[in-house]
Length: 175
Image (cartoon, rainbow, N blue to C red):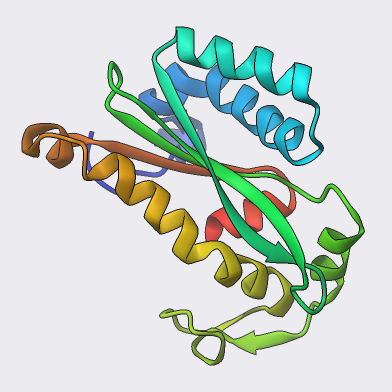
């Protein structure tokens, strides 16, 4: 696979083409999005069942922390990073809106220059989503580094990384 390949693209005759990586991993990615909600909502039985299923399939999962709410005053577990050695694949998964603090972030919709919020990208971003992302970015990167630093040089050069999320999590994933 080439780096930075879209997961879905428009091919010949405007037909949608699905990247083979997505096709192969779709069920697991959908279940990981469900797990992200189970973790944040503290559905221990559902989380434990999913985590065991993923472990059986070769995945190692580590959550990361951040803050949410209009003043970023509430502790949050916005997602997790998972690695599968057999697939040499890392996923970063963000949960969607699951509580009132998440909705505070959603409603803080002022368009703000990305660079004013510490994001190294051009243009404007949704302020509440960007602030929530920034609150967890370092923890997410440290969790990602935990997996990447454990890889051999050969695996490191070929690791596939997919970032996903549902609803608010999709917005966080895009940042």
